[in-house]
Image 1 (cartoon, rainbow over the protein chains, first blue to last red):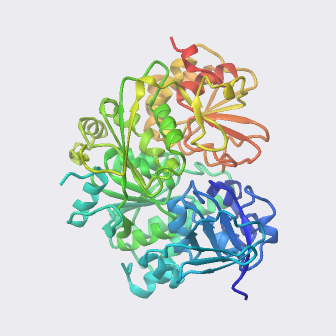
Image 2 (image 1 turned 135 degrees about the horizontal axis):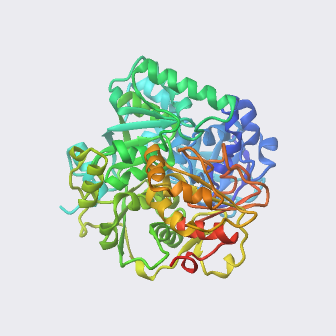
Image 3 (image 1 turned 90 degrees about the vertical axis):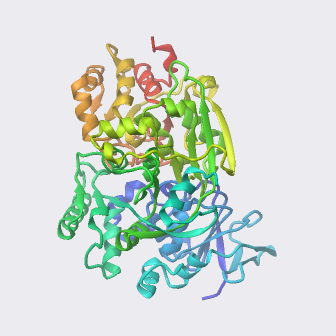
Length: 165
Length: 420
């Protein structure tokens, strides 16, 4: 898989109700079908057209609202490599890392729909290859980097027996 | 050293003085999940190789979102949770008991505790000066398993509320105003601390609306002091032993401070589809906005104090033709108290309907789902697109008084026009 992926542009305040609409709660035990509705109420072309390794790119306060963990789970299962946003709601941010989805706080202004992006998590660098934008971002706190590297919180706890803070 | 309330709670818990931004491990005093977050938490406990709880008395499961169930899948998830709770000897709060946050306030939360819940509105527990915060199912599962979790010590945003509310203005209006001022991401990662003479004068069930909605500004937690009001409330709940005084220092450095003159506010309404789009009820954007459904209830405003206000507006009146009025008490005790006081009779006589205790229409998974193109005016905390089950509908948020007044006219109505 190439390290580049296309940008899917979303706005500010994408709520967990837009990511995972409550009306699909009956699909909780059927993730394969649920993932077909990822971000459906924000834009209905995402779930059917997203490719493995693409990026969800948003403005401020991505993931606001409920604590439903299936929101980052289905974004991850949809194929997205990471969510890039100017800021995240805190429960979503924590959930994303816990389920192994990279959530990166970075200035997303200027990134356009379909731009080819790549991200270096360790170096804290985002490149938009289509229009030549380069951005740096603060790496995650150590504990979150470790949880992400271990493949999520469950794997992290199984490996260390506790939070490795 | 002066400390904000959240700094004091965390410092006492970890046995040393903490500062904002620090990452710490904290012991967890109570941890719960409900019927939407619980099944995944149980799966994750099993994935951890779980064989039993170290401290089962700290763990609870609530069945409140689908209460009672309306689908086979929800019924099977309830069954899974009941069997799990039974097998591992932890408390199950079954359908009909009420919304987790209301029941936690009534029965469990104590000043100074760390409470983790698998629901974003867990922050309501802060009304009793507990650091209560919502997390996802995996964090909840690990907190149940280890009885501890990691946290970033939040910066504090202090809200000093003074002044007497005008007629027709309530705690809900104050909070909608605050969120409108700071925005729906305005308190992200922060603790919102509510203090001042107005807070001092409010009983706990009135205060609860503020910390309940802290997450609507992005807050990690919302906190009120534990004081004489808390003492009176805990006594009324039959648990005076749970009281201890606890407060932040007013001179403690904080990130942000906002003074709110409550006496200057008019009733507020949040426009679709964001909580921070609050305007005064007299704003031109609300002129002749048709209301197809009014929903009274939720953890935000589903207490007896809220239904008393609604009933006083509805008494002897009739709900407008073409408008449905749905009321859902937040807990069994609210339901019983409402029965004694006759508030349900008032609502039903006015043409409304009363559902059994629980989350009701708010999460959009059961009774009270909206039709396409319909507007709902509700006392709930969140009006995101699709929240009540239909992305083609619109949700407006307001106080119980504004909701009740609007039920009578069928359009968004200033409660001051009908309150004597």
